[in-house]
Length: 372
Ligand SMILES: [Zn+2]
Picture 1 (cartoon, rainbow, N blue to C red):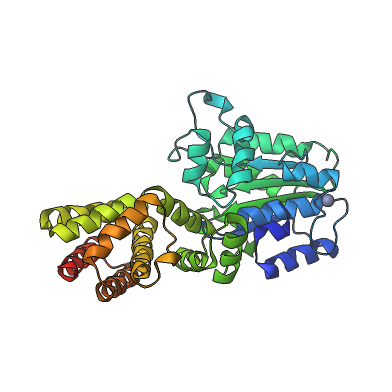
Picture 2 (picture 1 turned 135 degrees about the horizontal axis):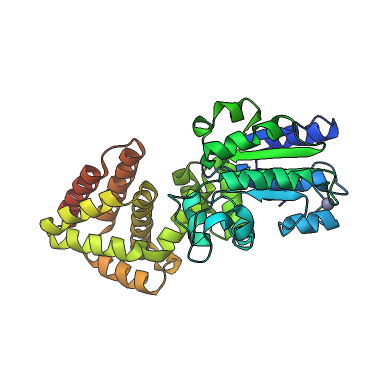
């Protein structure tokens, strides 16, 4: 991972690079950003930069032997510690980060913006139990007592230190305060409030903002091949959280269609019992899924309008086009516009934390009235 792969945050990057050039790298830094911020990618990029043999300008070169190893997350001087829990095959004292390195490298390759939930799903553990154990703190000290193999720096990246068992946190206080020479701790946290003050006071905080809408749009278009139009909508909904944006994309692809089609069918049939039950169901979904459903609905309405005005511009696939064809028989342009406005308003209310059950029930009743 290089700085250029992080996708933004030029200011943060500038400061980190300057600290290396001025030989003023703080030995214990806390990369603090909420879930979905690029705090972990930034730590990976910084670790690569610290050990790059030929940093060019403001980024690691990406081709030297150090960079090649860092790109695969196998550099012998870059260590990783992260929350883990027992699985079917790993238990007892083996429940430490090094037992899960294979899964971890895959996780970093595919989803460095992801959450603990997704990490737990990746290695097959329970996120509720995941923590950084006392045994792990012994490993940290052991690993750092070795001389750097080949790098300029030894880097210890601790992801989500807020999941450290207090005994583990206490176990590393001394080495965090006085690390061996050329050793850098990068603590990557989503929640400083959950950190022990003794840990906090020993680190220099680097605040990691979320990506801006513009940065997010660029990443979505370049790395995830979606249209600019959609990228803008997703970026707006995700509010700087790349992970949420990716979930939105997948939700829409996965089952958004069936859910929306069934819902509209109940509105059309004016099946009020079913609509009440549906509102409960929507209420139980997470916020990202709720918003994604509304967004999907807006897209369908736009396609429905298009099917009247310019059918050649339709962008829908098989089962969607069948739905649009049927839907367009009962919905004229005026009705589709009104429904779009309602979906938009519902989204607005959800953003402001209105109760989802009432928002969806109200929306359902209004759509049922319009369709009639
Ligand atoms: Zn390099």
